Length: 73
Image 1 (cartoon, helix red, strand yellow):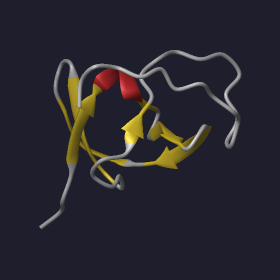
Image 2: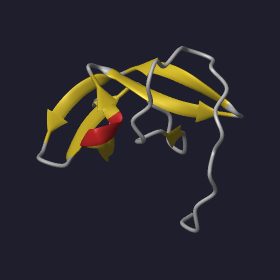
Image 3: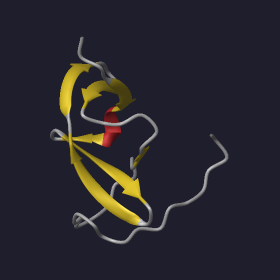
Image 4: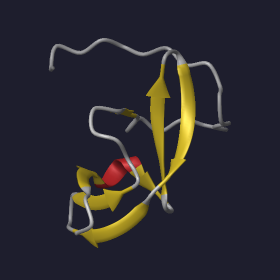
């Protein structure tokens, strides 16, 4: 059975997801399994990764980012 994670539709960008690893942005390819209005089911992501939903301009793989802490765990 294919395992997938539901993520915000804002986070999926043409088959890619931006994730925060340490203080760098990593572009991760994903496979979209199913789409809903506000979320998508994707495979290719590990559980617990920090997904970037903010729109950023001129993104490059490995670029330095500042991760803002949120209250949610």
